[in-house]
Length: 471
Image 1: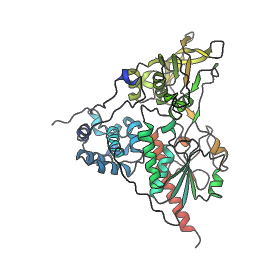
Image 2 (image 1 turned 180 degrees about the horizontal axis):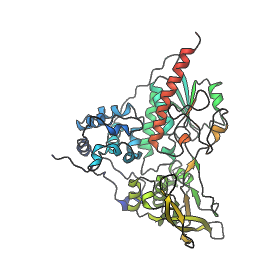
Image 3 (image 1 turned 135 degrees about the vertical axis):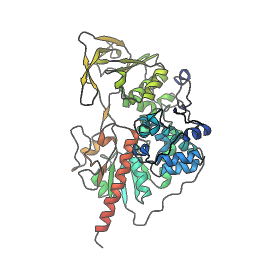
Image 4 (image 1 turned 30 degrees about the vertical axis):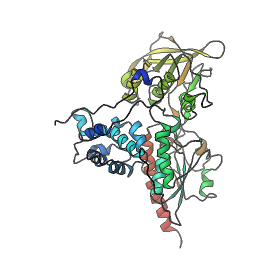
């Protein structure tokens, strides 16, 4: 049989149906499709795909296991380096990482590495199994992890497997970080996927303390002294919303994407009144921004009952930072894209509520520092976009609570913790940091890669301390 240059398509809910529900859009490969897709892998002598994976999954080896229908072997290979495979198989931007390096991509479409990872992980989650907890040495050292998001969970799992007693401190009432509060149910189911992945880490022996705000209940210094931890990893993410600073942003009906998605996902507003979290969504919703968070907010608003949802973005389609798959899904569902438009004011109805978004038309000029062409306003092009709800999805920054209560741990002008790119060590001895709190808002898998890198560095640090400890 000739090698197919196209990957097997992902089965999906019909757009007209899924726009009315919060069920997962992508349905996953069945066994026959997964095996057929695995057979497309060329098993290159130099696996460039693996070089594109931030956590170093042995991609050819796990695909080979799927090819011979050894699914238990496939997931075992993945779990050697990836603590959250069912999550990564759904939300990682494989097209910019492992699949981008696939040799087949030079002639056609890359092997569907992410879809195969999801298949193996879902196969594993569907089976009842007993996870053997780690047996800790009597003198096992203790590590505190601040934040139960992708970076923190990755670091915790890796440290536990290396024999450290790990306690994760999470400020919210649910673990998962952005996996729980940010990414919608229709892209990443919480009960069937996120919760099961976290339960597997807890079964290993990782302790997760919820409703615990480090910086208030404990400081980092108190964790290292009074609470008896030998090292600390900070993985608190980027959860502080940004606004544009334009007139009218304080009107009723204006949300940050963080609040909008948190109320829907973590606080289950999409199941109101079963859950007591109302979330007011008008008939005309404008979402400002062009990243994955903007797509998530727009598609969520549609499912919550909005009649019309518009993405307002100041650059063109080629410059949209969102994954192409997310843009495609949004268009299929009827989201309108108002490209080359930039808001200059939110207009009210005289009673404190939003009635419209005033925008100016843009054109693209010379490239800026990001390499993208700079948007320039067209004089006299102002126009109103009817909107009774506005969601600002223009990025987020670090919450300052940990850094501001940790003397000796330096931050940059944006408030991100300064950490060594190779070891994740901060300027405070014994304290490491990684993920969005260091880099600014990025991807789940990059945060996980940072957590894994930090775990290795913490291991080196604690082992060196152990060797120099007086006997």
